[in-house]
Image 1 (cartoon, helix red, strand yellow):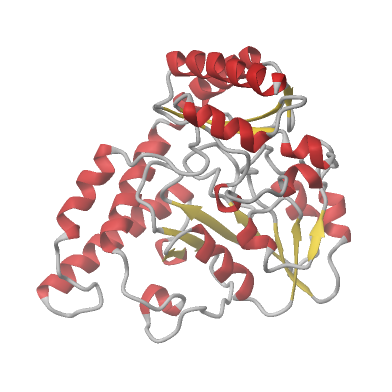
Image 2: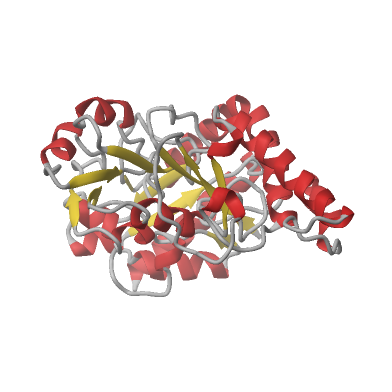
Length: 353
């Protein structure tokens, strides 16, 4: 099997699994006062310090959650007031916001357009760092400069943290996820800048600095810290290698690229083939042993065209033709070449139909 759906989820690193192993059978609750509880608490806080260091944050700014979706909800629902976002966000953000700013034809939003959507009642603007379908990097620094004083900036950085270098220091709230960087599923978090007040979504306990009630996922948090350390340590090398593989993939595939030629993440390629339905191609490639997607994994199973490609001004037919190939640290040149050959066979077969 050739796995080219790393934007949806990634295989857990052996080192992350090894770090988690002792805590899978450990009974200690991090909130308990006895020795087992204190041991679990030390593990959580050690992981928090390591994650904070990688994000350039204070440990008290890190709130662990069940994943990026919960972190997005905490950021957007934890403030009281009007929220502005873009029309290319993940569904966990789009579902919470009515005011949406459209991107240009390459999938990049304008700082000027974002600022123009802000009203006197706006308290927060949410713009993802890297688009999960096209890889387009959004201009967070320009958006920060364009926003009125007092308006918070949140970014869903699930496709950036540990994957692609983006300056996240300009954001007040940053969402991150473990399973996007070869960590475990079911854990992620939100970096909350000091001084930002958020109302908790989950109540009934004082965990996570009273921002998120519930017993911490000790094994998951420890595994995430291990995965993030490894991802960040190899980031420059991984980005350069994946960019070369992505370019090799696109050159071999032909088709039409969705998204910008430059200013995009190294691990994502979105390609459309004229006269070919994207979902049909995904299923045909799966039969060939190649795993790809036709959009966000959270929108899979539906027949609607990609909301991201539609927001970029594409027709429904063109938007339904998009196929997302996403690479990871384990992707090889041989896999890329084999995937290209499989895609060519699939496209030719589907066009004949």
